[in-house]
Length: 221
Image (spheres, helix red, strand yellow):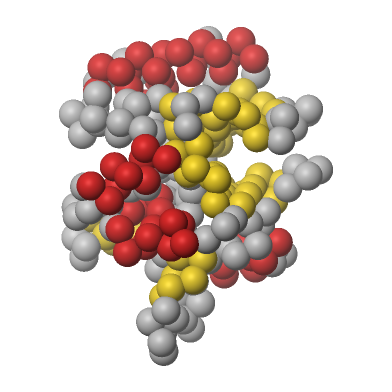
C-alpha cells in the first residue's frame, strides 16, 4: 500500500498478518487512514482477504513511529472518541518505546494515536528481550530508534522474522551501509548483517514493511 504522509512524502507500507495454529497476528498497524467509505483501510484489506478484524488476537509493535502505529487506534467520526482498532487483540509494545514516544511527540511520533494503550487492559508492555506463548521471541535492537524491537515467529514449519525498520526492504539486506535517518546508523548496519547471517543459517522468512515489490522471502548467500 502506498500512502502520502503529510501531503508530500510517498510512503510504501504494509503491515503483515501471520496466521498460526494459535493466533491471528498483526505486525505493526499502518498509518490509520480510512478509505472513501469511511472504513479503516487496514480493516478493509483484512476483510478483502476473508479475515474479520475482530479475529486478530495479537498486535506486535516493532516501534511507535506514526507510519507504523497510526492504526493502533481510530477516532469515531461523530464523537471523536478513540478506540483500539483491534479490541479483541493483545497489543505488545516496548515500555521504554512508549515513554520515548510521549517524550518526543511531534514529527515521528503522534501521541494521540497511542495514548489509549495506557488506558486498556489488553496491552502488554515488554521489557528487554523475551518470549510470548513459547513460540514468539522479541529482541530490543535500538538501531532505527532507541527501543525498537524485532519479532521472530516459529510456527514449527517456518521461522518468520519481522525486523520493522531495522530491515525494512530487501535492498537493505543486500548492501552494507549506515542509514543517516536511523538513531544509530552503525548499529542498524551491524544488525542487518547479524539478521542476514542468522536468517540464512536458520531459514528465516523475512517480512519487509517498506518493500511492496518484494514484501517477503528467504535470503541466500
